[in-house]
Image (cartoon, rainbow, N blue to C red; front, side):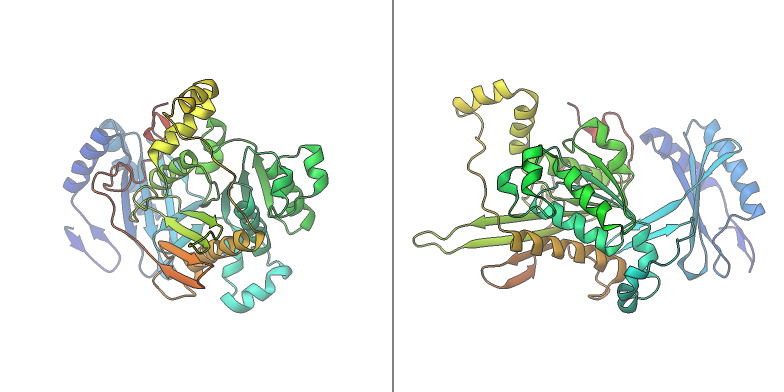
Length: 402
């Protein structure tokens, strides 16, 4: 900073020039942030003139864009991207991702929904418009995913993206919310069942369904358009995809796991639920021991080359799929409730200012609920360094070949 007055700050551009050099070297976009402490968040005429000059310099230096944000009073934020000299695109929403979730939108909120009045009575009038503006992706439409989707619709989430490749099976009927015996006979997809039930409720939630595995290219636009993602899949390859997505795009991931083991001679029941919140700065699913790259590779082979998978399975080079895991609706629904509670905590801090719990373990068999975490593994390619944080679109997608 060179000089300052109550209405203006003058600063040297030497640091900005160094930033442009780093951005070009790493294939990133440079960014500017400043404040209007006692005013609204908007770009003034002076901001327009100054940034236009800086944008020209940016593109002359071979950098692909210039991002700009201004913070005003009452936590207001405005942002835009210079995509070419003299050309800007205003941000419709800006997400601040940490232990808490803050999403600033430039689009006016819709009128208050009467069916959400009891929520406003608890969390205040500002809660429902924030929830109504959320775009939430739910990956997996089974016992936990179906419960999460139904809860989010009742919470008033404005947009739900539901993703699951599976068709409903008779063994799913004991825990998939909204499913019917006639759906099995009709061969309906799980996501279509959930969409039918949510739309029939008439609560105003827009639903988009994708009958595909989370790693399919057709899901990429939907995934990266979400404000928050819920991981309700039980496969390691899917979890690894969501794990990287949370870091590359800065989208908070609330991942759910459930382990049900029956009592045996000399061993008690093991009925354990897990809710993990994954974001840049937290240890990732690999460091938590939740996602196994070796098992993910086996699952990928099974999808891409079933014959080769069976050959290797016969020769004991890969693990088989094993017996179906036990599942009971009360436990799948309870851990789904705990996951949605983490979202509410991120938005409201109703449990205190500490934000979302990184890794919550619930032992249903012991009536025990505790928070557990770890340090990132030093060699972890996802969370040990900041190289992938907020990188966004790269080629190949998420930096993964194949």
